[in-house]
Amino acid sequence: MSFFAERLTVLDNPRADRVRRVSGLVGRSARSRSGLMLIEGPQAVRELVTHRGECVRDVYVRQDAWDAHADVVEAARRVTRWVHPVTPEVSAALSGDSQGICAVASLDALSRELPEPRVGETIVVLAQGRDPGNVGTIIRTADAFGAVGVVAVAGTVDTASPKVVRSSAGSVFHIPVCVVPSFAHARALIHGRSAALLGTSGGAGSLSLSDLLVQGVSARSRLSQSHAWVFGNEARGLSGDEMRLCDALVSIPMTGDAESLNVASAAATCLFASQTVRGLERQVALAAQRGARD
Image (cartoon, rainbow, N blue to C red; front, side, top):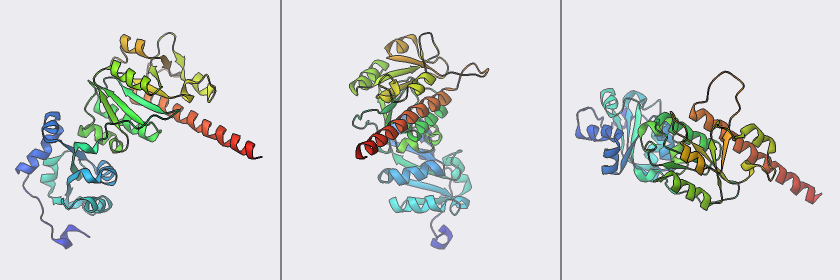
């Protein structure tokens, strides 16, 4: 049903205090003070209301987007009564990147605790990732390829940032992101889960990702055991200290002329390799079960 049929009140003052408070949530200090975050775009809002509906405060929908995003509006109205039609001017004042729909939620919408350890799990460690687009994309990739969580070292961009949330396509509402004060703390957390730290580096003495894939599910394969991929700063990569704290360094073979991969592309390559080995392990286990029955 359209808001015209229901005669809902349209918010039409782009200078209203409410609008100013919502748009201010792009800043980290405003989020910290209020305990709230801004979610922009239909995909991110859809994932918010589907997976963290209890945390939703308000949803704002541009008049001409109400019917275009009817499924998101319907899902939002199942979790909150505060779904507001707004004029194009108010929509633009709330967010310049909302594609006509944005939401406000409590910061509790983001899970900060990793699940209980399980054998063969994959985790991502972000060592001071500063670019919101890359960080959001890596979180989305970790979610897509079955990682159990992300560990963000202090200095990494705030994962409640609207740009991170938008780049993750809402994956921040599926996968936990645990923030730790230092790389040493991240190392202790990963080792406490009986997992190895695999740093991504093309340096001397590094293992080849191709070789790790060829080893597959053998006992020698790092990818058949619990492990955490470590991705460094976009400009500098991993520092010397961070590389020394890793249990192994892994390089990604490249046959073309490019000097290196973007960190988000490297993350996708490594996480796909981990998923591939987990899939091989399942196939081997199923084959063994069938053999035992025969």
